[in-house]
Length: 204
Image: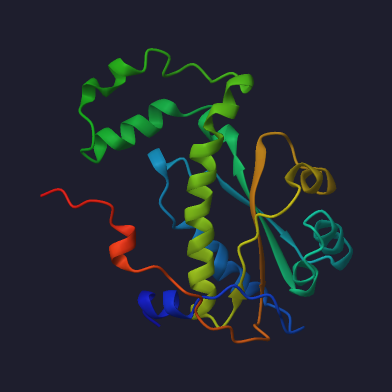
């Protein structure tokens, strides 16, 4: 299946069969996330793989009782790890220099390059981290289609409550919930605006 076909066939699945998703297929999905691009190669995505029915039901309750969250055989809790922004700044910059993005003088803009970022300052990285996690989640969604699986992006949730259920540390910020399973429905493509509506300006 080519990428465009996967994009056309990807739909938000809210009804799942009870068939289990094998560990091999889960590994394929996580590998798709692992290969995603990220700003300065921070790779901040972290996933909690939830198969336990009781835990899924607790998460469902904290996500406005969206029943398909517990009906899917697997629920991925997709998180951003803020600690990836706290260390290894020199390594990240050197990678960009080595790839030709920056020149060696790039380090001059980072006087504290070897100084770890204080935990209290990490919240400033939340938007950047969550954006990168979103890229990885969409990699999973498209790979799932190619494997005959369905997913559904879910952000209507009480993230702090779910973090408490899973006993997550403060450095993990929940970005989305992603149920995974074999579809038990065949939804059609919902209306999309035209290309002329999404191109604001062409600068030539």
